[in-house]
Length: 387
Image 1 (cartoon, one colour):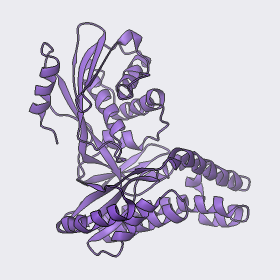
Image 2 (image 1 turned 90 degrees about the horizontal axis):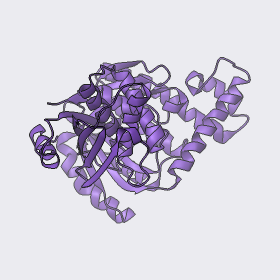
Image 3 (image 1 turned 120 degrees about the horizontal axis):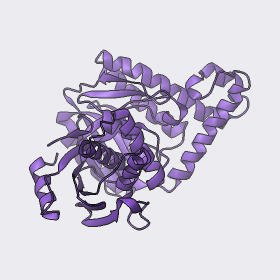
């Protein structure tokens, strides 16, 4: 975590004449289980982590926005009255998009100075963009005293990403960043946005993220293909079961009857989602009873399904999961995120992490000719004001 005094000093160096800023911490996230279930109106199980974006912000007397990204050493200035997506640098759009949401709600936005810094590894699939959006919406809410509820702020952050960053993301990332709670995961219903806090007490275990440092170009095109394949399965079921509106409503018996006879590939995709929703529901019961071993087995099963049935893994991710599956210090592992690169998430006994890294890092780097980076994460609270 970045100390508050360090952020204050940084803000003062950039804006020596500005009033003392509001400082907001907004975390990245991991998803324990429940992949590709969000757009099928199922459940996801994310948690906020101890890596976060930090936004220091104070109001100005004019309508100018002065933004500074410390980690990039880049500045961006514009007028509130002239707000539009940045065509050059992409990083301001996560902030500008949020300001646009306030304006759309008819809230009078004043000019402000802002400094952004972060210790979330970029490109690791930990949702650094959602953290920036949530930090921005929370800081503006504090300064403008708009008293928005957290769910509204989550929805504004998601719309900022849709409209200004051009990424049609689900709501999980912003939701986890804003609503997370220390030592808990969020069982989020992607249909209703209702959620339950489920205890996630790891005690002698840690969340270890292994970053493949690869992102295959298939990711975006195959993502859209999977959505279409899931929709096709729903359409075939709906011909006979009109109450089925998404794979959330489907059963394996329905797939056997209406989907498998028409298309083996479509059945395979849909069956993974139906099974994954069920895995998440029973995985939450494991957590309620403190049975991390059973949850870990479900994580391995999820990876197997993502690799063989949903076909969104890649050789790099498969190697990392295969490497740890017979290691009794690793209780669960799977690829995390949309697929075709990014990280694996692993539940590892804390005292075994150094030894594991010492063997897996050279093995991966030799096999794939790529660097392997890693992060140890703990589960922390969601977006908070820290000064």
